[in-house]
Structure formats: structure tokens, C-alpha cells
Amino acid sequence: MAWRSVPVPRLEGVSQEQFVQHLYPQRKPLVLEGIDLGACTSKWTVDYLSQVGGRKEVKIHVAAVAQMDFISKNFVYRTLPFDKLVQRAAEEKHEEFFISEDEKYYLRSLGEDPRKDVADIRKQFPLLEGDIKFPKFFKEEQFFSSVFRISSPGLQLWTHYDVMDNFLIQVTGKKRVVLFSPRDAQYLYLSGTKSEVLDIDNPDLTKYPLFSKARRYECSLKAGDVLFIPALWFHNVISEEFGVGVNIFWKHLPSECYDKTDTYGNKDPTAASRAAQILDRALKTLAELPEEYRDFYARRMVLHIQDKAYSRNFE
Image (cartoon, rainbow, N blue to C red; front, side):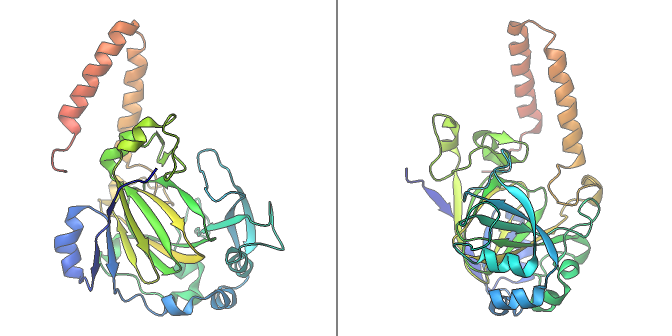
């Protein structure tokens, strides 16, 4: 079926002051054009990346299908030298492969020790650092990570949310990004931070009937575009051709709000995690009641949460 989408606004020549004072407070996705990103948008060709990126081993996702699913784990983890990854990811068919000749590759760069270190392109790929400039639209001390991403043509990543604000810099290639508001979480069939609805363009509405109620926001990104993705906004990314991107995440909440063991930037804030644990205990307590009472008091709890915690400051 044809889905109606709200186009994500595109603005050119936005200054730091405009973004911080007028656009950022709206907490909505926005495509920024004409940002000075350095030479990366012209220099980062397959040949250049293969040469400059070197033969450092990188851990990658490899899938036999285009739609990667982090819930069912329909992919395998493998390692390749960085130059080999770039060359293979740019191919439609592969002479060398792990699963099949048309397998898809996805790199999400990691820190030196992923359990303790965050991803930062300036540390993991220092020879590329001079080619890219990060948008200076947040304070330096707020910086959390810079994640280098490489995707095969046609690759689609699962719908998920992040707990930090971020810029998705499309360095080369084209992507289509579909986003959903945090307020539509109830329609997305969540499993943790991820949606169970994998095929967002042709969903199984028998299995996921509420999905049709979720409002879609959509944009196409070309080389040099920067997509602002506010924290908690769900996003699904489709690589329409081989491309390279860099995500810049920053802490927009006080540092103590975040889980100190989180190196990926996707663990819920500590207060939210504590609240979820308290809710689990409350539900176990409710289970001591007969069904009729359990249902009634659960509905009262939902109404209480809506009254006390739901925001009235959004559309």
C-alpha cells in the first residue's frame, strides 16, 4: 500500500545561533544543507578509503537479505580488513563472500575496547580525521561519540531509537530515512529499543494492525546532507546506494542521567531504567489478584500514569 509521509523540512545555510535558539528547541527532525563538512564528501571514494583506511580489522554485520533484523539476529558477525570491507560493500555481487554472492555488509565502528571505549572516528581512523568537520552546533563537552558507518546498496536497518541527540552526516551515497515520533511508540510493536515491524513499506497489518496509525516522517539524504535526529525519535534507514555516513552523538541531558557503562549511546537513562524495574515489581504484585481485579487496577494505574507523566506540550 502507498504510505502518506510528512516530509522532513530542509533548510540551507543554518547558523549555529539559528539552530540552537530556534530549531533545536522544536525537537523535530530536520535536514541541514550547505554545512561545511570538509573535503570528505568529495575525497571519500572507494579507492581513497581503501588506501587511507588501511588494513585494520573491523567487525561487521553480514546478512543474506537486505532487511537486517536486530531482534531475530538474521545476520552474522564477521571481521574483514577495512580496505576489503569497503571494496566488497561497494559491489553488487561478490567473488569472495561469507554467506552468498549477493550478501550485504554493514559497519558500525566501535571503540578500541567496545566494553569501555566509545566510537570516535578521530581515534579509530586518524588518517581520515583531517577530511571531515563536525557541525559545531553543540558544546564540545557534550560530545559523546562519532560513529563511522558503511552500508551495502539496498541495505535496510531495523527501526530503533537512540537516547541521545545526533547528527547523521551523509558523506557519500544516498539514503532514505523514515522516522516516527516518540509519541507513536504504542503503534510500533517494540522489543526494547527496536520495532518488530521490519518491512515498513509493506508491513503485515494482520500481525501489526496498529502500525498503520503511526505517522511517518521521511527524507532522502544525498552527499553533504546532515539529518538532525532528536533523541527518542525512531528511525529506519535504507541505503539506496553504497555510501558512507558518520553519526555524531552528544549528551543533551546532564551526564548523571546516562548509564556510565553505555558505550553505544542506546541504553535508557538511569531514571527510566529504575522506573521500569519498579513497574515490573508492581506488575508482579498485581499478579497476586484475581483476573477481574488485576485488570481493573492495571487500568487505574495506566490512567494514573497518563495523568501524572504524559506531556501536554506536544502536538
